[in-house]
Image (cartoon, rainbow, N blue to C red):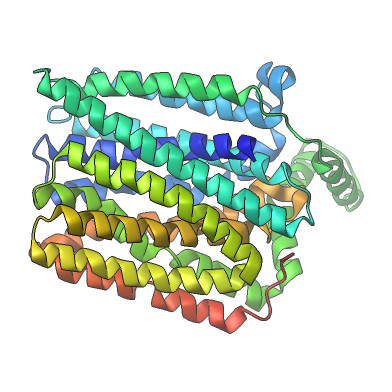
Length: 436
């Protein structure tokens, strides 16, 4: 469970960099809400990482894979790309080179999305295939780890930027990005202590190749390439649809796509909202990141326990209703003006809802995957969930502008967005095949 906690932190930390840190960096350089919102399109790569997930299941990193293991080699390679990108950001002024800033952000997002594929596979493979309760406990720990990387990373990022700004440095964000590089180095060092569990993945892939090869009368480069691509890319998808049936599989994908759209709209604009109603970076670090982390850790563990006791489907319904309800607290905050008490209450309850929703969601899709295609199937499901959260949520800033800055109405709309996903879940709740 401690290993899974670390893996979650590694996965969550890059979201700080391209999420709140990038948003406030751009906002403090006088870029518009719409620009900041559309910059969030870089998160869209998370929605498509399933396209190259099969390659990560099969391809090895030269030299590194043999030294430290297949999964860890991919993680460290991607962490190195993120670290290099942060160093590049530290030399750029976003007012003069906005396109380059966004391009490097896209590189970070792509490396992070690629890293997530193997992080999730390594996490799932730490637990036995039929250990349903352990999988839900593992999901809770993964979510705690993710929020630890995201929230505490956010505290470090915002407090560091505030400190160097107060010291009179004009390039305080660029200095902050260099400080964040140290966290990546520490994570890589700790990752070396995580042991990879042996699976039948390679044997299953070899068997798939053999079965497909028999269908061809001749063996040449073209047929061998066709067999490899089919076995690597098509087989995981066929396995998912065969297990669940076409209608249920499509319904599962619809639910996964829609479940967290409202949360994403709120999350994309939250730090801009906090700044606009008068909170400082230190206030945001304390309430949204620091206090939010404590709340998230506690209620993620409780959410994991709730999912174990009640079943993951019930947990999904409860967390969806909680998400919609807590978004309304931000409407109250928006209409009442700056209030540290209301800010704390809204953040705490929002984090409670997010904790329950995330642990239930992670456990849900973890239980759906075939262990022979762990990385590919989990990436497919997770990226479809991310598609709704990133591609559609990129219009969040434009929506606020369209509402003429009426944040209260904006948060009510985000609450309504969860309803379609719960309708999908209700229709298929008795037909889903999971090891619960």
